[in-house]
Structures are given as structure tokens and as C-alpha cells.
Image (tube, one colour):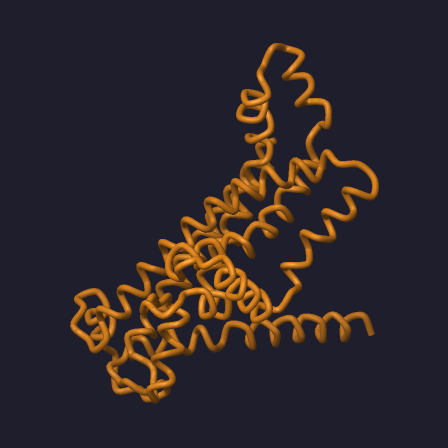
Amino acid sequence: MKTGTRILSKAYLWLILVILYAPIVFIAIFSFTEAKSLGNWTGFSLSLYKNLFMGSMQNSSGLISAVENTLLIALVASAVATLLGTVAAIGIYNMKGRKKQVMSFLNNIPMVNPDIITGVSLFLLFVFLHFSQGYLTVILAHITFCTPYVVLNVLPKLSQMDPNIYEAALDLGATPAQALRKVLIPGLRPGMISGFILSFTMSLDDFAVTFFTRGTIGLDTLSTFIYTDARKGGLTPELKPLMTIIFLVILAVLLFINIRSAKNEKAS
């Protein structure tokens, strides 16, 4: 009975993994063929990768511009969100009683709030404030929904630290800024890195919030470019190698961080 349950559990786990990763593997395989339609194998070829890097394709300038915009917005938004989220987490951690519960509850709302509601709300706010929509509004919107994820990653690290270590640094003559930089930040670094990576991924992936806050100046991120491209009746074939590269880069970063964390745990 136990053996049967174990086999079913493993089979269920592998089924979930196949469902999750089969589409990605499918795209990666067909990025190595010259066919424009997905699912049509015409022989092994690196022409799509060549077209992607050489820019010799239709909509090449639009796709490259969308990738550049996506990376720039994600990097800026993630960096600012990491800074704000870390400071906010320290503030929430030092609150007591009902105030701490209320702030933790308010921090969780943006994460469970549907993206379309966040996007429309920010759009109406920017219109009310007479903000010219473009890079600034998109970055501000991404910072808004990324910051709570950083708070969620940093708070557990604060709970693991000695609560008296900050006061001890002050008693030994450190200024509050020095105690924050030399005592708190090193201990919170793993949570900050996790929060930054999660924020970067969320920003990279976002569509609804970006769509409602980008305005009409022609600013495209990768998600809005794909949406516009799909509405024309098909997707640019070079998106297949681009998606494969993005997935492999993120996978490599996650593997590096996990291996490094495992080594640090063994060393300690």
C-alpha cells in the first residue's frame, strides 16, 4: 500500500512538472528550425538565432527596442523596489501589536489584487495627477507592485536575526546609518537578493499594469509587443529563440544562487 502511494505521489509530481515545462521545451526545440509556424519542423537550423542577433528580420527594431525597454524598466524598478521594500520591512518588523498586523495586511493586498485592477487604478491616478504617461509612469507602476514582494522576502530574514544586534552596534559607537549599512544589510542581503530577483521577474512578465500606464507614445515592452504582434495574426518567429534565451538565463541565475546558498549552509 505504501509503495503504491509512493509511486502515485511521484507520478503526480512528474505530471505537474511535465505540464509546467513541456511548453517551454516545445518552444526551445522549435527555435532550432527555420519554420515560421510553431510545430512545423523543417530541419535543424540556427537561422532564427542569427536573425535575432543580426537584426535581419521583420520588426527587428521593434522587438529589440521592446527588449531594451523591458530590461531597463525591470532593472530600475527592481533596484528601487529593493531599497524601498528593505526599509519598509525594517519599519514593519519594529512595529508592535495591531499596527504591525495592519501594515502586514496592507502589504499583502497588492500581491493578491488582480493586475488589471492595479493597472486601471494607477492609470486613473496618473490621469488625475496630470502625469505624462511613458517611461516614468511605467517605472513608478512597476515599483508599486514589486515593493511588497521585497518586503515579503526581507521580513523572514529580520526574524532570523538577533533583535539586539542593531542596538549593540549603536552602543559600540556606530551611527544609525553605519549600523544599517554594516550590521543589518549584510544579514538581510539574501532576502534582498531574492526580493530583487522576484521583482525583476515580475516586472519582466507584467502586461496588464504596463498596458494601462504606458500611454500612447509607442512605448513597448516585450509583453505588449507580443500582444500587438499576436493581434496582427501571428507571432514573430524570432520570439522563439528569445524566449529560450530568457528562460535559460533565469534558470542559470537561480541555479547559481541555490548552489551558492547550499555551499554557504554547509560551510556554516
